[in-house]
Image 1 (tube, protein in one colour):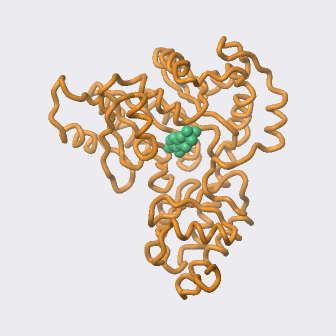
Image 2 (image 1 turned 60 degrees about the vertical axis):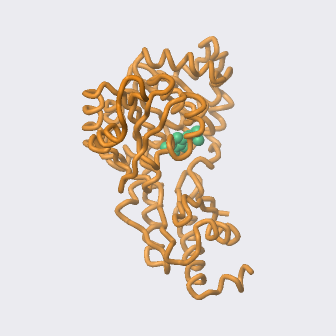
Image 3 (image 1 turned 180 degrees about the vertical axis):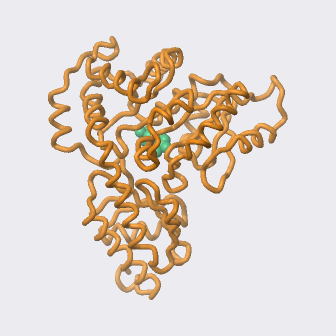
Length: 355
Ligand SMILES: *Cc1c(COP(=O)(O)O)cnc(C)c1O
């Protein structure tokens, strides 16, 4: 099975397992885990912000960032496809107890004009919900994994400051953005108040995320991590794996990006499939298969039976994600299998083969 559902499915390499085995650990509830401290210091330094805190998941980093920047009943402005809106709306209502105000965009890039439109879309008064925070996502996973244009981010950050709002960057795949765009990670980090980053996506670590910001916000985050049950005692095993990934798995993200482009080219003229090649910037390919007459959910089923595991992003879009555990040969094989399926769908042969 060639598994292209997500870059979260990777398993630790032998080298990483060795690092996990040998990690120096302590009780991180007492802030005595050397490996956790090392990772947090490394990341604060790497992204050039004051402080950083290791978290069990990207969701917890985001949820705690929302909690730190807002109070009950406040409003958070963002784009419709962002993870925080698309997958975390229930958590957000339950934990941060804020209202999400999202808009649709053509490319996932939230501009000051979008934010202003969302502010103006409601009657504003201190007795109603007050917009306190803007969120962006980088890479923008709901729009094919594109890197957030740095000028747009800087402009938005300037605008949110003028408005007295904070900006949180859900940078789960920030290093994919950085490798693809050539913009330094700390330049992206400088254009927001808080940044969350995942070790368990393209970097290939088993667990973990980090929330980065100034000392005051990270001190608050320490409290909320405790409240949310996110304090992990001998977390150093996982922090050591994450640090290893930061030091050894960043440059190779380029390989994932090349594999995504290769797959997009191989499937470009598959019958019933549309791919916007300009949007294949990092490790994802979005295939709009509406022309095939089959839903993305159905295609994912038949493709799985044929040996390629994919993800249905919506009823019409199949998402392919490249990662550490697939090489060029796997990609060529997966593309061949998928191409063949699309051809058979076009010829109405699928019921014969898989009926
Ligand atoms: C994966 C992801 C998250 C959540 O990370 P988990 O570790 O799965 O909780 C948040 N935001 C984005 C953009 C992601 O891709």
